Length: 79
Image 1: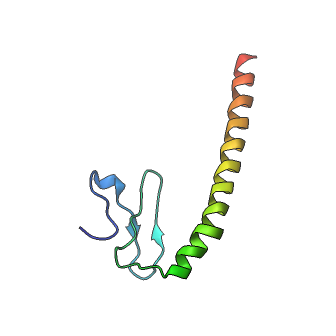
Image 2: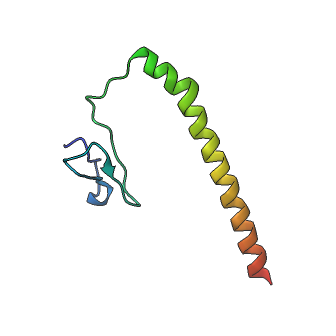
Image 3: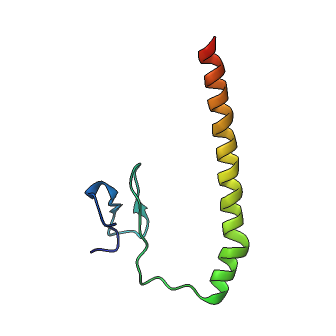
């Protein structure tokens, strides 16, 4: 199976432009990194200490904003 495919339905395949390393991901698609990717211990440390906490904060902010929007929509629908 090519590195840019996941097992299952064809709609889960990311479209990859062969001229770039950036996959073209559209909604309802996922991208599986090539198994050839290896991280050094230092890269893993940076990932754990700096990158993952940033991603988690961003997700929490996005979720809070989404929940606020949903509450506003619900209150407007009641009117």
